[in-house]
Length: 342
Image 1 (cartoon, rainbow, N blue to C red):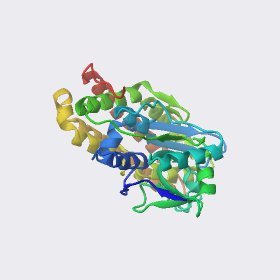
Image 2: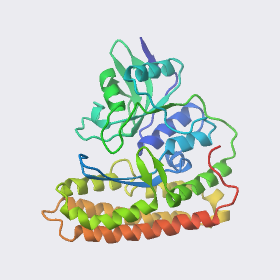
Image 3: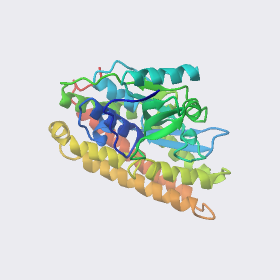
């Protein structure tokens, strides 16, 4: 049997999660930009992982936790976290059952096992939307932000991709189905709530299965960076850090320029409380992140790291100060009744 969700359309995007949400919004009749999806999901964050056996041995992630879940809750979806299934066969059966009902399913996957990427690097947590399957070919059809066309993943590799135990984010067939998105919600309330929520998450910290995301983790990273000169894989860790900041679906500056564009789009709702300066502040933060990414590229291409990690540490402390000031100002000036989700 072959089944693809009726009237499913896909557009190539910037970031995996926000592009997937944008596709789902379009399917349910909501014409939202990808930046809007990211911002309404309170998408900014910062993780820092360092574990024995990881490759590279030091990994940062500048996106926040549960962005997709935050967004869906704002549009009336009754979900508080990703769903999990330890049994691979049952997880695959569930995918087909939802597709049979024309319900798209967001999943998290390790790109190493997605054959269309042809990658030998583990990258768990990549978001794609399952929109069809073909039993005769033993493949699922998926929408991936990096590709304009629908891609196929074999049943066997889909199980591997969804249950990968690669650190720092081992997977257990993480998914959430999206049966509908509500109409008629107060867009200004959602916008103000999402901006406040992102500030709260960064200042207070949020801990999930992936670890803890917060601006204080940026400070911890800044403190540790001089010690990177002593790790065996400093060149690979530096190259991967550059990629995560500048190239891997982050709009060039650790998602900060991406979030800036969201702030510009929603400025009419924000200006009565924050004035017109938030996009400019976020742009300045993004400039610092871009500078950081270029520095890590330079380090990765050098025969010796020299004083590169000390320079990176100083820049990370600058970023920490800028982000703390920005998010503290957002929280201080937020209307008291602003709340994201339900």
